[in-house]
Image 1: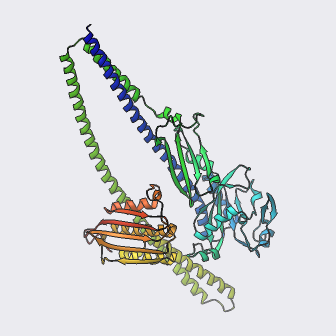
Image 2 (image 1 turned 45 degrees about the horizontal axis):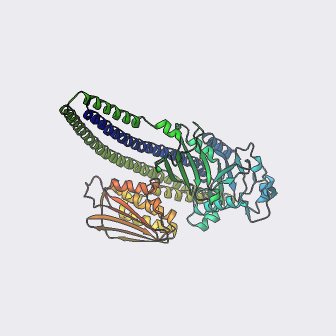
Image 3 (image 1 turned 90 degrees about the vertical axis):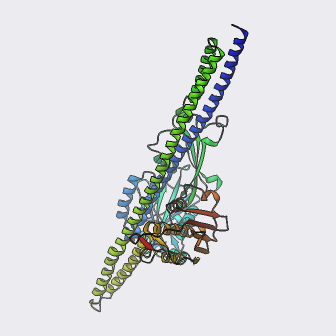
Length: 601
């Protein structure tokens, strides 16, 4: 063997080893990217599961509130029957309670048992000791409780005597919305046991009054649920396979020392989270915000070494092995071939590589075409789903307005007929009939409000522009904020789906302002610019942080974006803390539609 051949073989091994290491590094980088994508997806799955489970638990409490709103006062047996059904399906709920608003005059009837067959002593805690509640204008005792066994000591506790609970109750009373407390020590639990309390206010008449003053005056009490965060989170993860990750849950709305809610560690092993040396970037750390009962929760996930053990592949080692094997084969071939032979082999390999590139290019072109077709199909499916949903809402609204409204009207006429034929000395019966007539009137108004919220009849009867004017007027009436309209378009030729999508975007924007903006002035402009239709809604409220505007979990904002895509347009959100928010919808001017599908706007 000549020195020239030895030098050539060493050169081949050096180059081959270098290329093999490069292939290994590239495969390792690809593996980390793939694992990062797997981790992010599994973290999103757990976040979605927790959000859905928490929402389901809170909806169970809203269902109990709906029972009070629909039937009025609920006796102890009815409360127990309904609560037992809820607790069977929601084991994360430790208890359901009815907390009435009791005046000082009614306290004696509560404690003696005249109000209910069970006497309830109203008490509170002073320096850790149970004492009778002192005299004050009103109390909020625990009156109904389920399960009662083991929790008898809680009956009669005046919840308003605890500052944390009373703060949440006041917020729920003034907003008319479900309100969740922060981490709270439970009366019937151990010293280190914490839970969350959720309150839903109940008002006289079964509906939420329009103003804060009326809500405070007509408040009858609260339905309340007690949750334990560990059970709530662990039940939401049932059915998801272990993935080797730790995650933490924090309440960002609470003081720093009370934000921690829950920590989850995988059961596969006791090894800790990945260290900085094992984690080259942030692909294996994930954080998101959850909106739970008016509070902001943060969910943070970290990958553990078990995650890599469960999900890694052997591609990097395989790439290195294949590279070294090919290098060895090439060196062996050089021992028995001439330079010309080596060049022919390299040329053949080059041709094969180019052929593979062409094949992969053609495959990628086919995949891109398939993806474009799938995107069009998904867009068409979304349009159909929105249309079906709006048809169902319109049908329900029509049934409520026509059937239930007519029945209530007929019932009121029958009461008036009976009242006109009562003896003159039947004053008590007449008074009761007048009360029934007032109740029917409130039910008619409630039916009209529910029907209008499902689908305003004005949208079909008078068109989009009049519906926008009506919605703006309703907004001003509900919130007291000044709403100015500047509509510079006389007519729009929309079909039914386009009309619904456009109105829902406007309605969602106004709803967000009413709920979150605390605005005093709202400006609405509808005009045409450069051949495009523009709807602009601006308020002078508190504004939104940038992370909320771009948060995919903001369901209202995401819904407006999706509806805008169905109109071949887009929605732009601009906001600055303390200086309000602007929503701008831009879309092409719609082409005239046929008379069969046209909806005058």
